[in-house]
Length: 208
Length: 192
Image 1 (cartoon, helix red, strand yellow):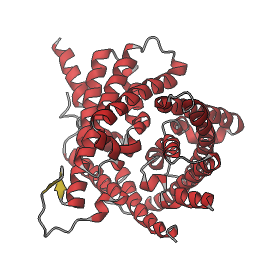
Image 2: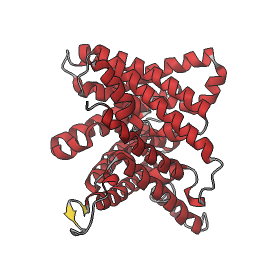
Image 3: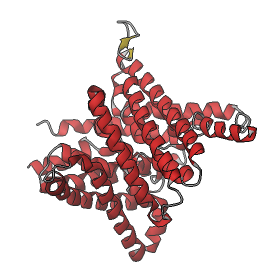
Image 4: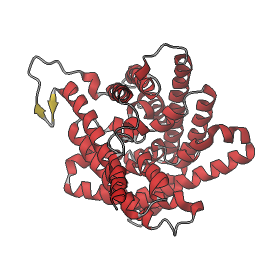
């Protein structure tokens, strides 16, 4: 029983660092780059993705014995597309400004490789509870990554965080940070940082 | 004239990869060899043109007419998945070598955000049928162009002395950032 609990916790924990999606798996790069010009957009995108990922993992792992493997990708994509439609309508109804600023990137969650990737790599082989833990871990890791990207870009690009001015008048905003180029540069820098930090730890000791 | 504008805009100024961040997965994944990049670009261009040609009538004559546009995401993704399946079957028969080279990335065109993004932008901007097809083709050309340039740079990078932690994805992203800066220069092309 104890062993079972540790492995459930492990499924959750691995998404937060060991398999953190944008930096380690290099999945879900499109939203990581596109919607992280402010913290709030990054968090909203992360939570929407978390919802879809959770729903998709639950449904797919529950149905894993009934979906024929030849048509599984098509079936997964339809399930994901339906969940995304729900998320999109929810955002449009409850948070119109956020929905507007995320624009086409909400429907594009359908083709976020993280979701199909987790369905393929995890949910189709595992029961429902570990799949939920897996989705929560990866989803929260993804949200944190987007928030970090958003934090750096908003701070350097506008001098503010969550629309609160943090840096004074002396600060000259780095316009490049809110432009597409800045997204690539910050992302590249963060990947290098994650590589650096993990190379200093001896591999394998922090897990299990 | 408008068609030329759409072509220039979609292929250079608003390059999907470098300004909308669509199609980043293959952009990072398959751009290590020029040959693979070119093949992937061509396959994607083909799928994109077909996607534009197929989704436009379905959206306008089916979804709008029967007042069910909320099904657009599901409808689009099914059309794209079907098209990719056909292209895959065709390539497997006609060129097994190319099929092996593209490997896993061929089915991944389905989840290439650029293809779905193209369909969504096409609906949002309310193009007519001809414009939509030109837009689809131009987007593919822009994607191929970005892939080719990236693969050229990466082949050179193999010989460069890159700091250890920046190797791999990291340096590729930074190079992409510089390419995005360079592509901003095209913005002046269309204001005239």
